[in-house]
Structures are given as structure tokens and as C-alpha cells.
Image (cartoon, rainbow, N blue to C red):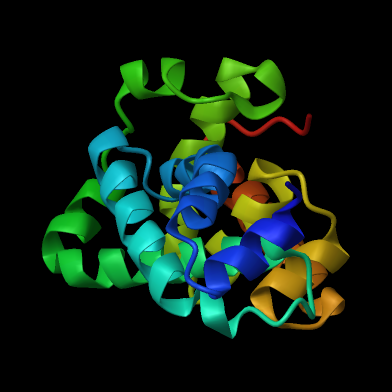
Length: 186
């Protein structure tokens, strides 16, 4: 059964179709959550919340975009809600280095653990830059979406995604120049 058929059946109340849809996309949801927060237990919580939100809001999916695009947005919104609920505890954790064993439990960026570790560390720093920067980096560098696809997920212009990534690169170079990070362009 295709995603489209599963979605329609789940929207009509078929619990088995919903379970199959979640099963088919759980890895994407968890991977996105894991890259957002860098801690397995927290990523599991975010993914669980995303599954609950998916059950409640699947009826709102209108097939106007790719389901994965819509799903990325849903997971990112859950991650942001979770982060906000964590308050000071989460802000303190954003300054810590992610736990190494977690990287072995998730798919690595282009099968390169060093790149994954760098991405997780930088995402924590980027979160301090403001709204939208972390999401753009996560989608483009972490998930491999192009600027146009990321813009669709974030519901912004493609040029906004490009600008955000440019700003991140510029600030990383500045941070590196100040001795804050070792930055090498892949």
C-alpha cells in the first residue's frame, strides 16, 4: 500500500493503516528529533509527541505537498514545543557536548561519524542564533534536503533558507577565527 493510500485510510479511521504509516516513517521522525536535540531519550520523547500529534492532525494533511515535507514540519514543531517546555534545563543542555554513544545509535551524516558529531555540536550553537537557523541547517545539512525543499518545509522563501545558511557559515568562520571551533569546509 502506498503512502497516499495509507494516509487516506488512516484519515478515514483505519488504525492499522495509521500504524503502518507510523512504522514506515518512524525512522525519519526519530532521526530528525535526534539531530534536533542530540540526546536519545529526549529524541524518543519528541518522536512520541510527534506520533501523538500526527494521530490528531493527520486529517489536516491535504496532499498539497509531499507527506515527508509535512511530516518534517510536524516533527520540528514538536521539537520546538518540547524544547520550550524544558525551559532552563534544555538551555543548559544545549551548551553540553552530546553523548558519544548516541551517535552510534543513529544513522550518521553521509556515514561519517565525525560529520555527525560536528553537526550535533554546531546545532546546539546555532540554536542561539535565532528562529529558523537551526531548522534550516538540520534540513539541508542533516537531512540532505535542497534549499527549495527546506523552504517548503519551513514555509519560507528559498532565498531565506539560502541566507540563513550563508549567515551560519559566516558566523562559524568568525567563531573559528576567534578560536571557538575548528571549522573545515567538507
